[in-house]
Amino acid sequence: DQQVKQNSPSLSVQEGRISILNCDYTNSMFDYFLWYKKYPAEGPTFLISISSIKDKNEDGRFTVFLNKSAKHLSLHIVPSQPGDSAVYFCAATYGGSQGNLIFGKGTKLSVKP
Amino acid sequence: IAGITQAPTSQILAAGRRMTLRCTQDMRHNAMYWYRQDLGLGLRLIHYSNTAGTTGKGEVPDGYSVSRANTDDFPLTLASAVPSQTSVYFCASSPQEGSTDTQYFGPGTRLTVL
Image (cartoon, rainbow over all chains, first blue to last red; front, side):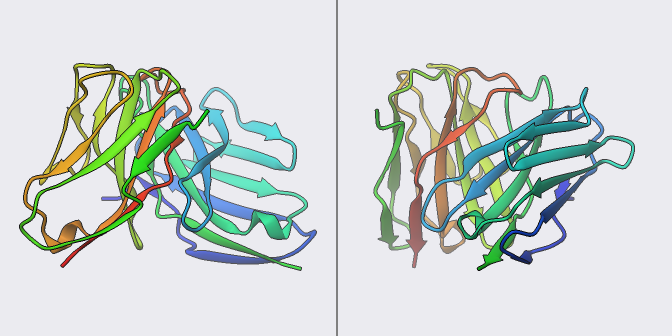
């Protein structure tokens, strides 16, 4: 039973356009959500996070939106750049979980020049 | 500053053999984690340690053991490797075990069990 779901295995976007990556979760206890970016042959790197007390967090070209009632979050990248091409993982956790992250399966983003 | 290092980078192992994957961090982080990444399954937590001297089981602990003798090192041992343990293994660390602490990942070890 997957608690964090990324239903789109891949996404292709033109350079300069918006990339929207989606993530759904089922566990109501989750109160902190993160996005990690992973290039081939490298470990995941932290990108952006959001607490459940917020519905939006922005960092440069990256914005994460959280809809708690729908148990849905999304990552927006504007404008998309070829260097953004990577696998993006959504992850969730909650207080008392001792920091253990539950990851989605990932979405492979390809940004075409 | 190296951050997190993992060794070996890759390994091919015969089934039934014992193998230890090494992980070292120089950030003096309290918490450390081991994940495996399989195609189509994302990253799954194997074991974790909130501080030196303590360890805990994650989502997929069977067939693996860990130890945390000091702050910096968190080795993962496969006592008797099986083909289903073929995967990419990532070690991670975070300053504390709190849910809002960012985890920093190592470059990974690609393990193939034949």
